[in-house]
Image (tube, rainbow, N blue to C red; front, top):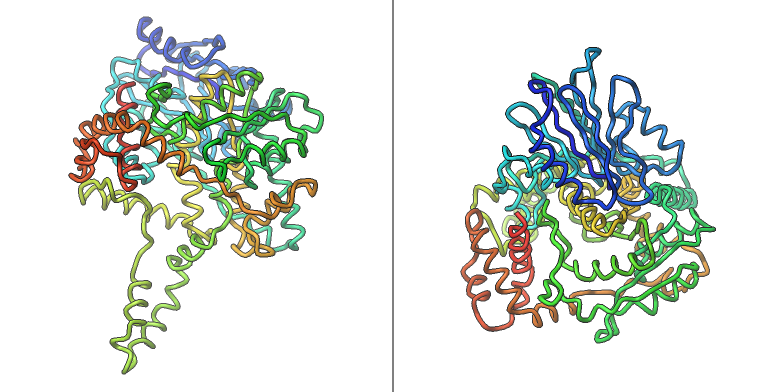
Length: 582
């Protein structure tokens, strides 16, 4: 959550003072805390903390090295490790991104190492200049430099508008690159070298009993939660009645049994009692001894004209329920929260029947079964059977990339996006459910997770998701699907970590929340704004992605939007709001 900025050059001793001041001012806008600045021949850095519990981002592990880290150490020992361990060793563990400047004995810039941990929970972006490099924790900081163009990256935005994952190194701006999750990039005067650390499966479950697997799941959840909390004294939690967030609430209580500064918050809807979780969440909070507050979200419409949403200038990726999230932030503000947690991304780690079947059909183990099945189906009398046609389609069809076809790019661009997705899919074939592993660990999830940091910084607090922890993620993604459904219950392992004092409806039941009615009502109440913003976005996006005539007609008509066009309209509207910031 820290704010980092670095100017690097092997050809100039110092940056232009006016340009550096612009860069520094842009970085300082992101935090409420004063930063510190250091410099030498060929380099200058600025860093500031992002919330009260954070430590100083600049350290000097050795006289010839300066280290800047966007990290949140759990304790003093962890802080020492982050300061002294080799930078490349910091890619697995707590949320972290940063750089290390190597200075020669003559005091000149020698080389620079950039690093980002494997889950991509912190962002680090960089851009080449004519005489050097710029590095920062956000794209808009870099764009304060006059050499960098604000032209959008068409491939990135095409992926965004079609709900596909962008290239991991891409940003929303063509001139700026993103450090890939797990990457260690070394820059020097004449070349650069990159190495990437990727998560691999955790097969320890094979040596454990069912009880041992449950115990290890609980231990890893507690470890992930403690890493997220760091040394924060005031903790918030976005609490629902679902297993994911309730398990985090219980883990916080185990990690901080005596903490007096807790605040749970839940939004709900008076007009839709079937999806209102406030009463259930309040009961859960009482059982776990969490102070609780509810937020009425009936009129917190998505894209509301009455309360314009904040827009992150770095990326158009944003929650469709941003207004609800901002109301939760306001509640945390009133309680003095330093960092808040949620159960986000938990759904991506626990196997579902649909993911299991999809991954099974696309897995290479079919390569051995396919030829034998094909030969048997070619026997006389079966040539025209529907079973042969079905088997042919199943065995010949490659894994299908997710996304929407309501906004489809040109065929060549679509082939590029789909080919990239399939190549990424093949990188995760060592996991039992490769499609699910890709969904949980791909670039889109990283952008969504790190993008929330900007909104938290606006409120002077941090945000973290325990289910984005690398050790917990690889553990849950490595388990066979049947272990996630022990006793016929979904998310059985997480349920087993819950205290028995919780209501049985929580420990054994399914979450019933569905925000679709709220979204539909918001689109009707804010019809004119949705349509005007979507039209604005379609005119701009039309430069690189065709907008269907049916959608254009629906946006221009005075009628409520058909349900089919809600998501494309929202994507175009979000794009329009983001372009206004650039």
